[in-house]
Length: 288
Image 1: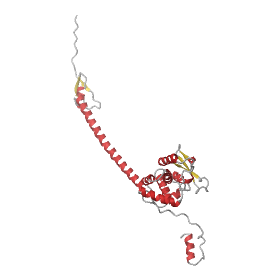
Image 2: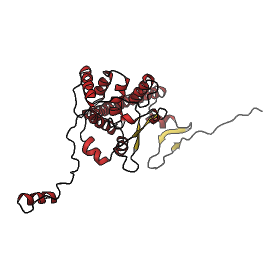
Image 3: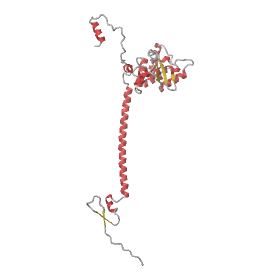
Image 4: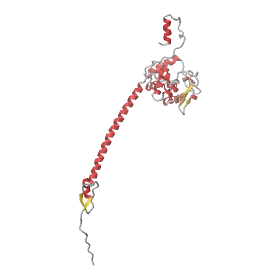
C-alpha cells in the first residue's frame, strides 16, 4: 500500500482527523480517449471548411500539432519559413521553462498548400495568420463542417487533432524528434498521445508483409526459371560440341597417337606411353 493509501485508511479509522495530502494536486492521469482522425477524415473536413482561414486552422492542429488557440493565434508570417519548410511556434504553456518558449516544426506539403492559400487570400494589413475566435461560435461552425463532410464528430476538438498529428508522425519519424516537434517529453507522449496504435499502422504492416511475400515468391519463380534456362543452355552446348566432335572422347587415345606408334598402350605404368612400332629401314636411291 502507498503512503497516500495508508494515510487515507488512517483517516477512515479515525486515527487522524485530516489527510495532510488533500491539498496537494494529483499528477496527470493517462488519457483513455484514443480517437484517431485519419488522413482521409481530416481531408474531408478541410474540404468542407468555408474559407482558407478555417482550412488553415484545422491544418495547424492536424498537420503541425499546434495547441489551439494559444499557439495558432500567435503565428505571424515572420514565423513561416517557406524556403526551408519550417514553422516557428511560440508556446505560452511551456515558456516558463528555459528553452521551451518556442519550438520549430516541419511544414508538411499539405500544410504548405494551406499556408500559401491563406497568404494569397489574406486581407492586406492583417498580421495574425488565424483570427477566428469565440468558443461557442467555433463549436457551432465545426458542427456544420462535420455534417457537410459526413465525418463522425469527435470529443476534445483540437486536442484530438493534435494527438492524431503526433501518432501520424510517430509512424514515420523517431519519437525523440516527434516529441520536440509536438512540444512535450517522450513520457507525456506515451501517457496521453501515442497511447494507442491506429488501424492505419496495422494496415501498413499487413501491406508490407504481403509485399515481402510476393517478392519472395517472385524471386523463387525467377530462380527456377533461370535454372531451367541454364539447364537448356547446357544441353544445347553439349549438342553443339557433339556435332562438332562426332568422335567419342573415349577414342581420343586412338586417334591422337603420332604416326609411327601403335594403337595399343602398355599396361602397368602410372604414366603409360605408346609402344613404338618397328619399321623397316628407309632406303634412298641416288641417281649417279
